[in-house]
Image 1 (cartoon, rainbow, N blue to C red):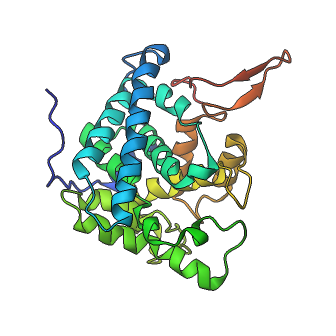
Image 2: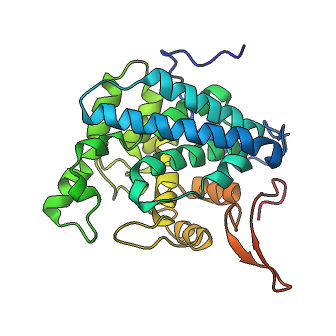
Image 3: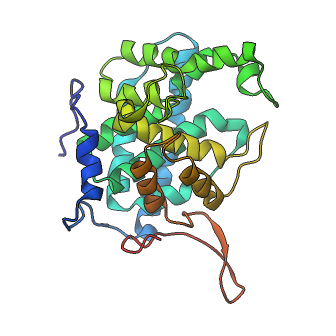
Length: 295
């Protein structure tokens, strides 16, 4: 049997060591190779998505009622997602296109987790690090369960008075996760920093630069990407291609420059799920990424 991260595991994820892998001229074989095809993996991935969705709803309901988080269930579905992403990222990424604005918060948490794991695999994080990142990503918005629904779902711009309780969801989420059993500080960093921005213009702490850390920076990138590509009550989501173009223009201001460039490399110029017109006039849907020629 595989050894899963212990509840006490909280390794220091060295931001500079991860980035060094993409600035060095040293050519090395990638840590992960696909072990299955997308066709072989998609059945497993579909079961994982169903189970994860149910788990997220249960956890959100527990938090609303003031109960403790079922961390064992959360770790189980994240571990299953990690295994699937390591075998072949594309299956979960294809299923990640399922979007329903009426279920935004729950499905957003699931999608952000998948995006974070796919990005983490691209960054060659270890399996233990992927599990820690996945837990943080799955639970990054848990503090929203303490924000009134009329604010979360308001079909228009929030007033300053309404925005204040929304911004409180980050520290509230951190408090909830710190009180939960067996959630590492590395995982909690995703909730703590996912609205911070590289130039210091984010919230709720005003942390900037590399002080946001690897997990916080990854969380900020994938959370933003899913938010701007999703239909909400107050805006229509943009295409994946347009979203990546926008995020590239925001590098250095909102996101760590090298990290957002690697996210674009990870996703590909036309990410999985993109509807494209081929040069012969045919219409196609991108279902897989060429891992050796991602652009």
